[in-house]
Amino acid sequence: MPELPEVERIRRTLEPALTGARFDRVVLNRQDLRRPFPADFVRRLRRHTVRALTRRGKYLLAELSSGETLVMHLGMSGWFRVEPTRQLRRQPRDREADLERRHDHVIFTMSSGMTVTFNDPRRFGVMDLLPAAGRPHPSLARMGLEPLSRAFDARALASRCAGRRIALKVALLDQRVVAGIGNIYASEALHLARLSPLRPASTIATAAGAARPGGQRLAAAIKSVLRRALTLKDSDDYRHTRFRVYDREGERCVTAGCRGVIARIEQAGRSTFHCPVCQL
DNA sequence: ACTTTGACCTGTGCGC
DNA sequence: TGCGCACAGGTCAAAG
Image (cartoon, rainbow, N blue to C red; front, top):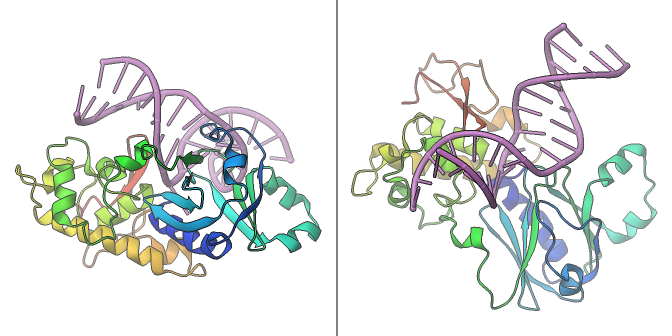
């Protein structure tokens, strides 16, 4: 699920269960995800309280009463189940539920009465604990601006793209350029901005690092597609109302007056969807 | 320093 | 129905 809008929605779902609540019980069903869990993971969480649950890019950050920060990343397939602890105990389990629970890797039983379970079939997720006084998490420290913040604008985007020869789409996937964009919203934003995913990233900036017109459109498009994804309801048809180009190979381009057909290409080993006619 | 490639995992859907 | 393959919303290390 997880690009910025999805992670933010998950944060909002978890907030009532976690914020202000204490970890009564922490269960690890394995020793690692993409990386090993940090030393003494269970002991460093148990009996501590979540002061706040925030998000940075695609990372969820739980600030603890101990001063440490629980860092969580969902990878490709990670998600959280939130359910009342009581119901959980007497729930009958069918075969399908058992299959799903095979990938329950971390179980937080909270004093809020809710149990929060991290499930991740592919195990590309990460959980880490940052000591109170330690260095910030390396990938967090180098991360670009939050795209929905005031600080993120055409100028900021252009300066991070200036001089870079990589394709613009590939630049958008680089979390140091801008935080939280993934494969879907990279394609979506480029289409809305009518910019080719193939053009060098440097072409949205002047030599001095200022934004050219394409850079202006792209910064606005990034905000627009992310904000829109964030405000959609769960009940809204995912693909239909949500995507302009993603997973729409062979379909007609939705740009007004454009007769193009959406194409799928591969960049950096990942699919890119774009309209070869109106995205220049 | 930059850029590219492949590795890390399991599940699903498709064509034969 | 089963099998093999391509593909999946993300990083990260290693090599050029």
